[in-house]
View 1 (cartoon, helix red, strand yellow):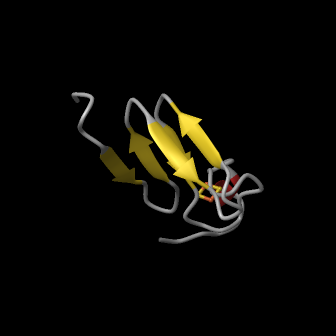
View 2 (cartoon, rainbow, N blue to C red):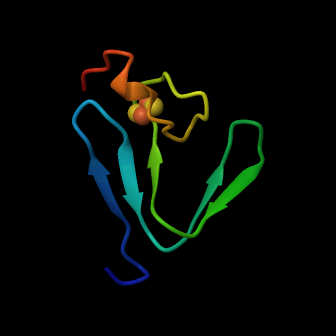
Length: 64
Ligand code: FES
């Protein structure tokens, strides 16, 4: 993967894994978070660290 390629992997019953070298995420309150390595976004809604996955999907019965 070169620096200009963004790869997203949707895990069954789990998060969306964002594989990139740098991402700037704007949160609902307008603040930004910079990630300089791969990270996972929550799809289940149960994470205490939204929008990021904290592993809660394994215990909430999420199917998707
Ligand atoms: S997808 Fe992992 S906590 Fe929601």
